[in-house]
Image (cartoon, rainbow, N blue to C red; front, side, top):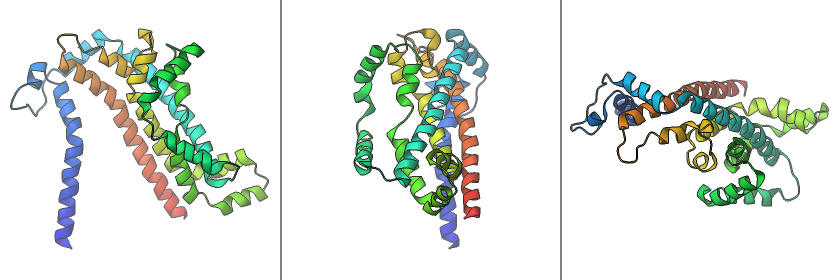
Length: 272
């Protein structure tokens, strides 16, 4: 048992180092020059060019404007997905209605289609609505998704007791009261994960904003950072510094949400 425990800890430590190394490498390269990035053997310790690289990022793009655009879009998408997906997932999990199984199968079928197939039809629809170049084209189509509904449905089926809903009905609770006061407090761990997952996906989205946005003042962070790539020569130290700045908010979000996620699970275990 002692040898097995040692092997387990060694394996977990190795996995941790492999997971952390890309972030460490990103930080190291952000403090180096482009020549250092191509050097061999690679330089594994920090340089002194972080300030210069960051200042050149600010000189070449409107970083803070793109940052606030991305924060607005990602936050709006996360809030809308949490509301609509939790509402639909709770309904699929705890209520019976005509066509329920067929609708759920069709919902799962949409998860099998590559997102790239919908780019042209989505662009045509946005053009018909006059939303090309608008944040509405980034937020409204993504305000609900099949994965989120499936995730909440699976969690609610096991975690929300039907007896608790029946007790709420006896007390005179309607559907929205059951959803808001009974189901949502129980679904907090699932909502924490879904909110973080949606926010990160919207924050890192590149292809759809690149297609739909036409005004440079409305560029999201990923689109703005892509403009740092030159046609013939690219200063990769500057690009990596910009990438580092874009990753920092996600790391902060992950640390906050993971702590909240674990505390919610622990609270639920104590209550049960």
